[in-house]
Length: 176
Image (cartoon, rainbow, N blue to C red; front, side):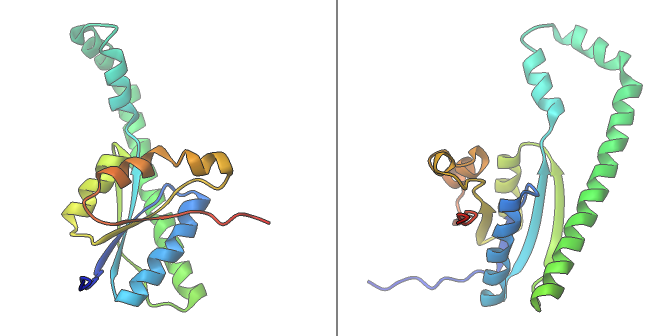
């Protein structure tokens, strides 16, 4: 049996900014160096508004919900302005993180693109992997205990099940 040639030219690295995600970045950088691949960093901020809308729809009529939203327009506007600031802050943190890793590890790999999105993390990861023609997704499992081993993070689990491309799931090592 002849094995297919593996070519990785674009790696998607989704991060929730956790310790496990930072550890997984080492694998993304290592693979990028090995294959001379690009790294796209993706951070998805969950969209609380859409979750709330779905939950509220079973309790009140749409007209009443629209009225409540209009009543609180200014509060919502201020919230959106704060979310935009969060976007900038997270982008700066990820950019600085990427630069620090490059300097500390004497590596040429640096994030070619940093994307910050708002929405469903699983859908955004899959969407971005397709839009950017990624060959591989490298992400943390969020599990580092016996119970967590059995119950892998729900986002990671759903990405594994639904992704059309290979997904490398990286665990934090056990502390001795």
